[in-house]
Amino acid sequence: MTASKEVFITNIHGLHTRPVMKFVDTASRFHSEIKVHKGGAEPADADGKSVMQMIILAAEAGTPLRIDAEGDDADEAVKQLAELVESKFGED
Image (tube, rainbow, N blue to C red; front, side, top):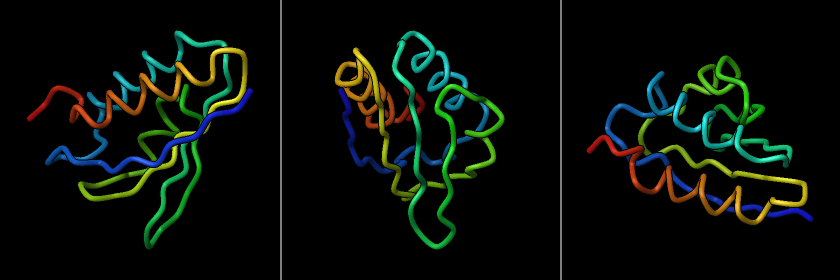
């Protein structure tokens, strides 16, 4: 099973350490493989369960991200991760 959703980074400080930790903690609860594709001027891909890869994305406010998951719990993984991003990681 695969699932995918496009979201935008909307918190003021972008994807810095605290939101990355929340994202990776949430992603790690799922069995599915989770990939994050950063769109925009400097596209990049990251393993959604890797703190270092997610930080290297350097996604600022307004950056589009596509969350892709593949596995038995892909739908729920994408749903929860998208909700986390859309909630501005609880920051603003």
